[in-house]
Picture 1 (tube, rainbow, N blue to C red):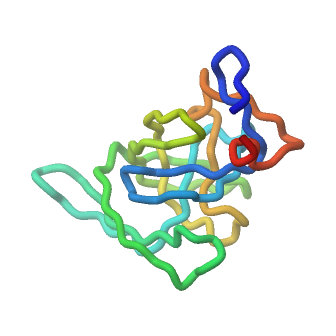
Picture 2 (cartoon, one colour; picture 1 turned 60 degrees about the vertical axis):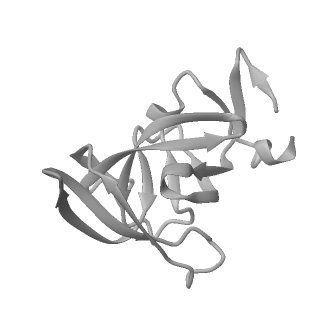
Length: 146
C-alpha cells in the first residue's frame, strides 16, 4: 500500500467497504471536485426510532447485478441542500458511516440520493478525504494493486 506522509495514494476509482451498512467491495468514484460524498439508494423512507429520525433504503451493492438489492437503515444526522453536478438543488438525508479504504477506516458523512444516472453508486468527496488521501487522477484501483 503506497503512502505519502501517512496518506493513502488512491486513484480516481477505488473499492471501499461500508461496514456499518454491511457492504464490501463497492466501486466508488473519488472526486476532488465534489465537497460531499453521496451514495445511490432507492426507496428512502423516513421513520422515527426512540425519538430520533432514521431512514430505511435499498442499495444495489454490486454494480454488475442490479437484481441484488439489500435493505439498510441508518440514523439521520441531518438534512442538507446539495447542488448536484447538473446544478439542481435537492434536499438530502445525511448519515454518518464508517468507510474502509485499504488498511484505513474512518467515519464520513454520506448523503443519500438517486445516482441512477451516474456510472458509480458512490462518490467520495473532499470532506471525506481531507488529511487521509492523495489522489492520482490518471490511475484506478491503486489499493487493489498492493
